[in-house]
Image (cartoon, rainbow, N blue to C red; front, side, top):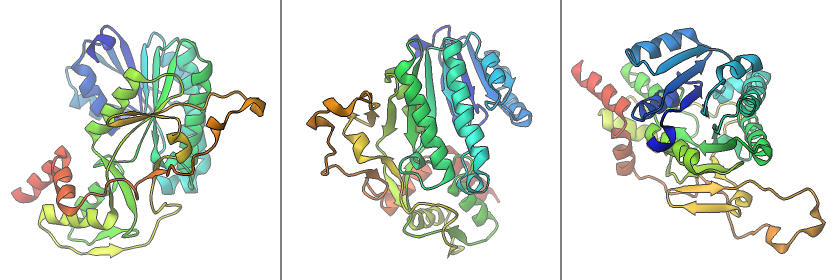
Length: 341
């Protein structure tokens, strides 16, 4: 990736989050000219500035993607954009759906249009498995973000606009594993919503690899996904207890607002337009015109193709789960703190 980044300016929206920090670490290994962290929280920017103290290539821009003039100004002279800013919590988006609309839909449209106006070469938008067959406001808002990206990806000649879609990133902010660790430290039972609920699992490094794969290889309107294993939430809780050598119990508390029993990374219709790229799948946009009088049989749905879900992907057994968890630096750090007490 270094050649394509040489002497380039890159902006990350929501750059103070888990993905932003990991992408910054990757970009600092390249010969890029500047990394711009765009976010609205000055305190988180101060924490990030302290974490990357002395890194002259990182600059910080206070702004909000909801404000078109703000993001347009930030993107002046930028070559590449990674769009990670979003409202991601399912329950809060259920209670405040218009906030999800303003950030995930209108804000994303602002990023897309500002990128095109500023002649950004490549824009990668980060989405979620909850955008496929969505049942909650967060997923619906992300699904519309994908549609906006695909729509402009068809018509924009100078800016390649693509999306990536992934499931749960292990130990990312707001995910369940930090909650489990906190509950263990307090001697409380691990709370799970539904023991049979399954989720795709990947670590932050794998999620960042997926974004880079799309960045390097996408055509306008593409969605990239990574083939990922899954686990049910009960086995995940047991694995956390086993690696921490604790048994504070497991408490089933019932499903939260609009949670799905399993997630879908790609629908059967999308898979018909997919390209297998080894670890990844490239889902190309449906670029047919609105004149349906000349359709061919190739456009008929193949009933033999199933959705790609967290129920029918590879399910990690207990030993595999523990191995995956023990490779996460944040979990290693948490275990180290536990043993030092």
